Amino acid sequence: MRLKYLIVSLLPALMGLPACNKFLDVKPKTQIEEEVLYQRESGFKDVLWGAYVNMASPAMYGREMTFGIVDVIGQAYARTGSTYGSAKAYDYANGNIEPMINGMWQSTYNTIANLNNLIAELRTANRSLFAEDNYNVILGEALGLRAYLHFDMLRLYAPSFRSDPAAKAIPYVTQYSFTMTPESTVAGTLDKIQADFTEAAALLKTSDPIITNRAITANIDEGYLLQRNFRFNYYAVRAAMARVYLYRNDLLNAGLAADEVIASGKFSWITVDEVAVADESQRNRTFTPEQVFVLNTPRMSEYIADRLTYTVFGSTGNLGLYYLTTDINALYPEANDWRKLYFWTQERNGVSSERFSAKLQQPAGMPAGLGQRMPLIRLPELYLTSAEANLDADPQKAIQRIRDLRIHRGLDAGIPDGTPTATLMEEMKKEYRREFITEGMLFYYYKRLDAATVDGVTGNFNKANYVLPKPAEETELR
Image (cartoon, rainbow, N blue to C red; front, side):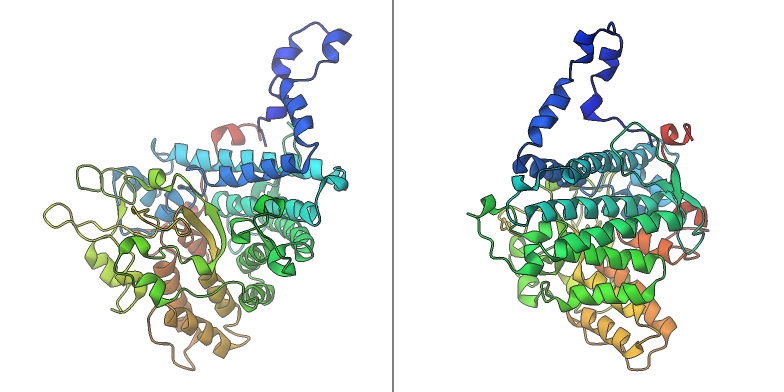
């Protein structure tokens, strides 16, 4: 893996100087700053926060790895403008699309590099620098994020576990250096992901206030440990582990991990009073009580512009990601579905008939606690994971999990006792398609199952489309 690191950014200039002691003793300015940075707890916190900021960038979960290209290739939108139309047709070499694909890889691995530097410094840090449980919390979050990011690289740029677990996959980078990391197999990468998650869970289980119930106020440590769902908390780790287990078809452990998060009681279903609000600016658009892990995204309005909003000309333009009313009615056939009633823009009669998901829109007057959120893990995913994990082991539990989701979307229970497994799988697919628009989930769902096609594809589907091309500069060196 070829990466550039800030700590050694001045080395090329120094290499051209005479090899005398005067120059050998010189440290690059960035290295000196880094040494100072890690002399206090706040420096470790700042580096970790930088990883979250990077994750909220448009090349990552602020856009392309959620509602952008990853949702497009999962056919989350019925229609797109011409720019994303090439991605919808899986033309990954297109001049508009290739930079997006390369940008996801490069930005993610740069973030991993920063996490590796942080983890290395934490391994040798003087623990007396840290207040109470903060050392374990910071290290646990960093390890968890490293695993989380590698998992999404695996799900994008390598074959699925179901299709070929022995295939060459991606480099699992754990060292902060110029050394190229060999590519692991799909199964080998998953093993490394699980190892990082396991260590992260162990650290956080004894230290994360979300599970220890340690009292935290804004006056304690400047509120660093408040709002734990904005951080990769213990339950985010367990939810992500459920994803990994399900990806490798370990149904027992997937169900156990999902059920642990559900049973914690830390996350609750949205209520009708929070969504059926006449003043659209007051609607809880991203279902905040259900968020296990969410990114603060201050520039959300900028990132969705022209993609999930009308252009100045009153149309979708080249970047639009949208539906028509007929598409929405087909996706949500039941009239009382909250997701149909409250979370789509209206047609502009006489101007355009396109309608956008309103989930991420930031209307004027929106309460501060509801805006600028990009959800990455929500409660419905855990219910669907638990349902799938129990299809054979406990079919009635699987049925009830699906019913619970439906009931909390304004629908009746809908799933009769004794419903066949194949029908339950079809019902779950429908819920994935209805529930996670703009959240980047659908592509991974179809790929995990090695599905023969993706609903919404025009023409024939080639399973090679499940593997995005790595950047040329990455493959040329291997």
